[in-house]
Length: 406
Image 1 (cartoon, rainbow, N blue to C red):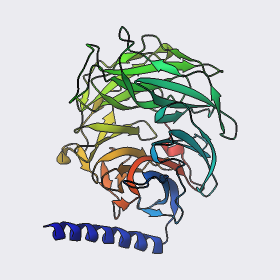
Image 2: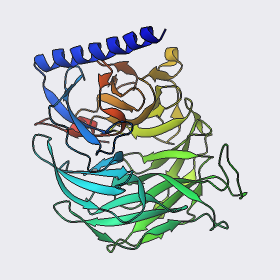
Image 3: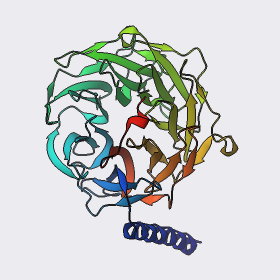
C-alpha cells in the first residue's frame, strides 16, 4: 500500500510537470500575472518564495516563470497589491515577522525594496485604493492590533501612528486573535476580523463569556490615526476567518470558520455596519478566504475542510446572497486539497484561482460572467511551491478592463 501511494504521488507530480512543460511550449497570450506565496518547505529555515505565473487569456491556464523571488521572510501568509499594480506587499511570519515591499515592473517581475519589522506577528495586510496606507492586522502577545503604515509615492513603507489595540467591549483583558483586514475601495474605512480566544478555544480552556467573533471598523486620518466607526466592534459569529467588501462600497461579508456560514452587513453613513435582514448564508465546511468578481455581482469562498469553492450571486439591491449556482454540484466546485486563498483575475474578470495549502497547487476556474458559475480551466491544478498561502494578481499588457468595472 505504501508503494502504491508513493507511485500515485509520483504519477501526479509527473503529470503536473508534463502539463507545465506543454504549456510552456505553447503560444500563450498573457492577460494577467498571478503571484503565489509559498513556504520553503517543512523544517527549512530558508525564506519563502513568490512564484510568478502568466495567465492565458483564452484558456485561463497558467504557466510558471523561471524566476521565483524570495518573499523576504520564512513563512509568507498574506499579500496585497496596490491599485496601480506597481507595488506588492508580503507579510511573513516565523523568525522574520516582517512586511516586505516589492516593486512590480512592466513585465510583472518583482524586485525587493524595503522591509519593516517590530510590530508583532503579521496576520493580514491590505492597502487602500489611494495607495497612501498599508494596513497590517497583527498579533501582539495575547492581543490583536491594527497598524496604518504610511506609503510614499513610490510605495516605500513609512511610519504610522501607534498600533490600535483590538479590545472586546467589557472584556478588555481577553485574548484576541485577528484573522483578516480589508480596506474599502473608497478609502473611507478599514475593517478587521478577530475572535476572542478567551471565549472560543476548542480543545482548550475558556475564561470569558463574551461573544467570540467580532469585526472592528476604523476610519483613518491623514496622520494614520485610526478612529473606531460608530458601534464598532460588531458581532461576527463564532470564529470569523476572513472578510471583504464589494467594489461599490455597499456591503461587507465575513466568513465564519466555526459555523460554516457567510455573514453580511450593509455599510452605513460613517462606514458603520448593520446586519443584513436576511439570515447568514450556509457555506461549505470551514470557509476561509473570500473575494468578489470585479463587478461585484458574485462572491467566491474557499472551504478548507471540504476542498471546495462556493460561487454565490449577490442581490444588487439588498446584498443578500443566493446559492443558486452550481446546484448540481451541491453549490460548490472541487479544488485541490485545503484551499486557503482565492482571487479573481483583474484584467477580464473571467478566471478564479485558489491556493491549495496541502495540495501544493493552484486550482483554476473559468467564471461565467452572466451566471457566475465556475468550470475548471485547462490542465488544472497547477503545481506550486510548498504549502501556498496567499495569492495576488495584476493585469498584464494592453487589455481593457472597462467590462469588469462595477
